Length: 151
Image 1 (cartoon, rainbow, N blue to C red):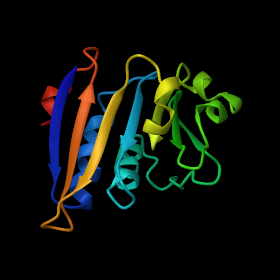
Image 2: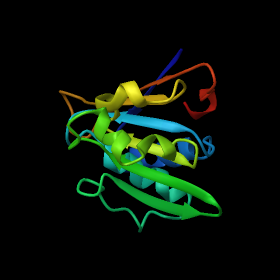
Image 3: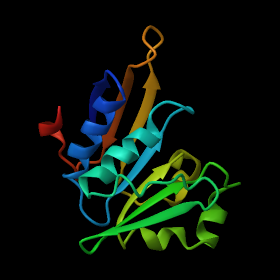
């Protein structure tokens, strides 16, 4: 396991980091986004999609579970699994099949931890108690990922 930390000073900082982060990923990579409401997960997804020129396409998958995006033969799947009762519902929608077909961003992915592939990136978003604009992103990866140049 490798651990990294990024401190974002504002929304633009989060988006810019996510855009650089996206440049390092390849199809079949899975990224779990964890953190309380309002901690920056959706802003991160906006920045991530901007790397692919899709920043104007974003919509929350809260009611659909997954939004699908495609750019230059790369599929990007943005999940919000907050409303799922348990991981069996993820199986019911064929969720695990997405893992081998594109990049997966999964908000609240800790709720389906038992279905996640062996190798994935976990990003935990935390608010700073002293500054409402600051977000702390704690990133944990398996040894398959090297993110050193991002920080």
